[in-house]
Length: 327
Image 1: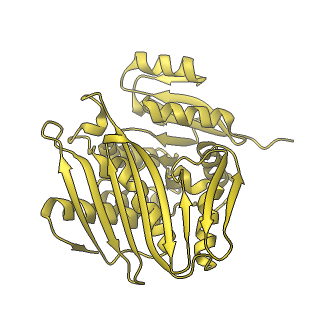
Image 2 (image 1 turned 90 degrees about the vertical axis):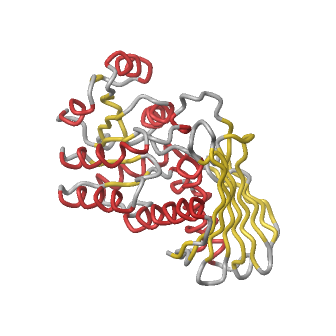
Image 3 (image 1 turned 135 degrees about the vertical axis):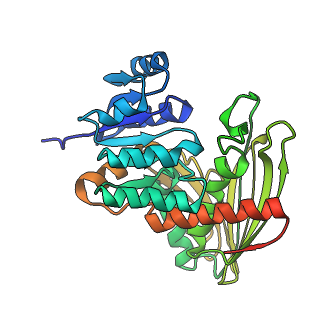
């Protein structure tokens, strides 16, 4: 007999909400039962197009739905804290879109609410659920490239619509929050430790007020260094490289690895490594469902998310103040 599927509700109707709706449909362990939006017509259109059984014209009504077991918070960055806490208070498990929060205090409050109400909260770094990421961590830990020296990552694209939330300062947009969170998470994950200090430079849009380009450096206690650059006003770029004393690993698609991903290892045993897997978003839905129903350990833990938020805040401060910031 097939296992009962977890029942999902989605807060928000933007692009990433549609990506998750498709992933839930393809999941072995998920079923999309409802979507909530402040715009009733948008919620109805989303439900019809994405296969949700019901739609609600408010977030509150979705949270009150008795058959919604897991809530995916796909709202803008500044709404993650409030609606994750409210979902926890409603007894719902929460997969919250990245970055989890704007401040460390918000992140801590979100997890405190989840713990107080006996529900799970996980930050939606879907790339962490793909076997490519796990294998990269193993290769570094096994000494495939010798002692870790440098992690370099980049993630950028060009936003043309001035109304896009990524260009909204009131909604905590900008390159660091939107895509820099990936680079920081990847760097910390590969290093296996937290940075001692960070340093960053940013260029802020004269109209948007957000960091449209940002480059940063993380200084790790072990001696490894991570460098990253991100932007929302640059040509599309996504790449990572992990360099050690005896080689390097080249990762052409670190953030959205394909169902057949390929990495190149130039080290003690040079080779191309192909990893077959499901779509990363589908794997994320399956994984979180297993955390809820079978007690699996979340791939992105409370400590991980709070530390990543702290790193984001330190980089933001460094860019604004033009100086290194210690963590």
